[in-house]
Length: 107
Image 1 (cartoon, rainbow, N blue to C red):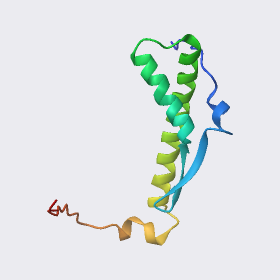
Image 2 (image 1 turned 30 degrees about the vertical axis):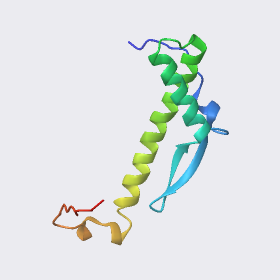
Image 3 (image 1 turned 90 degrees about the vertical axis):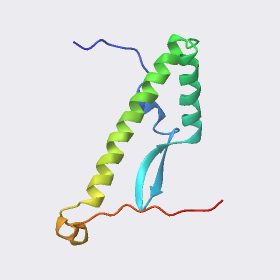
Image 4 (image 1 turned 90 degrees about the horizontal axis):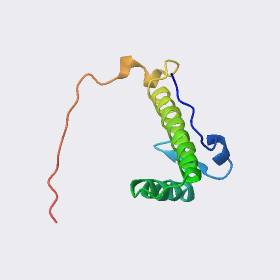
């Protein structure tokens, strides 16, 4: 059975704490630096045992939004790489071998 918990709804931050960023040609959801800093601050307060119930509700909402973005971004990435409608991304064109390489870099 799920235990209800108090939290600020993740949609609260959609207008002010979310941005789209292009990474390798793909647009993904990310937190603004302000929202990321607030999340980090709340996590630090929680680790120190200083978080208030209101702050915990805020952290829970931010954490839920992070989980939603992680899922949405992973779906976007998977679909962009292996789209069945794109001949260049088809499994027929996937490499049949893989190589790991390392290069020495002098300091």
